[in-house]
Amino acid sequence: MDNPLQQTAPTDPLERVHTFARDLAYGAAQGKWGTKFQVNFMRGEEWYSLTYLQGVDSDANFIPYIEQKWENANPTSDLLESYGYLTLVERFESGNKSYLLTPKAFALLEKPTIPPAVFISYARRTSSALALLIEARLKLEDRSLRAFIDKDIPLGDEWRDVLEARISASQYFICLLTMDTLLSKPIAEEIEIALRTPTCKIIPICHNGYRFSTPFLADLGERAISAGMIDALATKNALVVDTESAASYEDKVNRLLSRLGYSTI
Image (cartoon, rainbow, N blue to C red; front, side):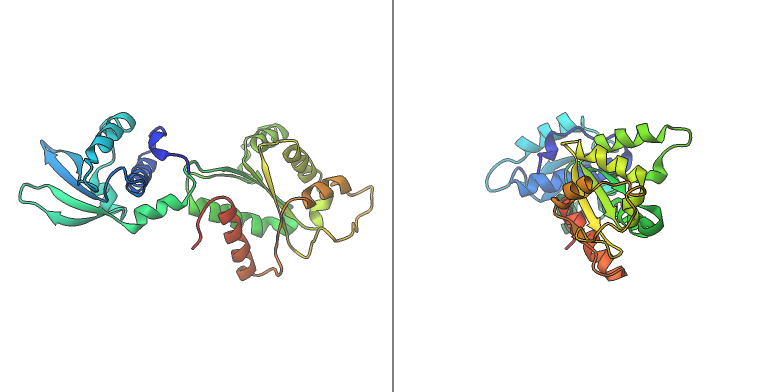
């Protein structure tokens, strides 16, 4: 993963808590500092100091990090404890406290440092349920992940311009394929944009009985997605939903999350 310690601190208060906890876990995992933190209080303020790690003064790494990334305005230990990222192990008469990083903090390292941008392309009549499930799971897994679905287009905006901009800016293009998909001109346009965007990884998901080997049943005059487009999609390693069931959806969504860099264990 990219070094999160070198990234800019977020401005959103909630994201700052998660980011600081992830940074603490990353630094501990990399041997830059230990897992035990002493929090000192003075004049109503607090600051962190680190225990020694393998004979090395880990404050030498930690203090510059706090000063440079957080400008000494990092989230408080109370917040980190409330979110379950620190656990209190000792309280001193002076009011100072000693904490340990929790497994929940280290679990943050199982997510991408920078959440990807994802575009979900689907036919409403046959794929709405699966599309909304994918969107919900992505946002549940990482609230800062940018998952775009067509219901997010603001009223009054030129939808073609919005779709092209969103797809071009996405790292992943998830295309839900059914027989209905072949008849959709908007989806054909979306696939065309994704195919010509080299930075966008296309992940086809075949469901509702559709397979790449399924012959075209629609009349040539009605079919929107060409055989060439299907051939191009067929070169991608696709997910295939064997049965339209909650268990099958859950399995495929978990595999999708794993492909995006999220641990589902």
